[in-house]
Length: 102
Image 1 (cartoon, rainbow, N blue to C red):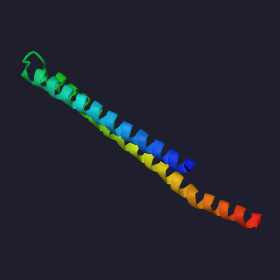
Image 2: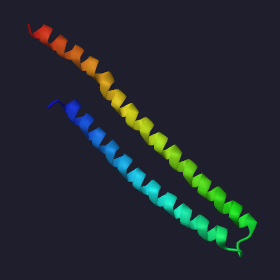
Image 3: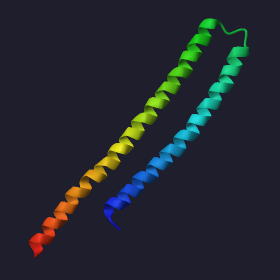
Image 4: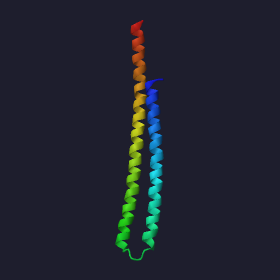
């Protein structure tokens, strides 16, 4: 089996594992946020400023989670592009090797 194909399969496997793990963690965080919001909203002892800070904190976590996901997706795409860029160069190298052997 070609090394590039194996490496490509490894990258695909790693991306799928990342996607699954990220989805699981996102679901846990979303459920935690919902429970936290229910507890805070129903509690009359928590001042409005604290509610604003908690809301800001939850929004910041969502934003950073989204940024992390896009960063990881971008880098997985870059790695896949590197594999595709190298294919024509190696094909040219093999042609040069075969022509020099003749």
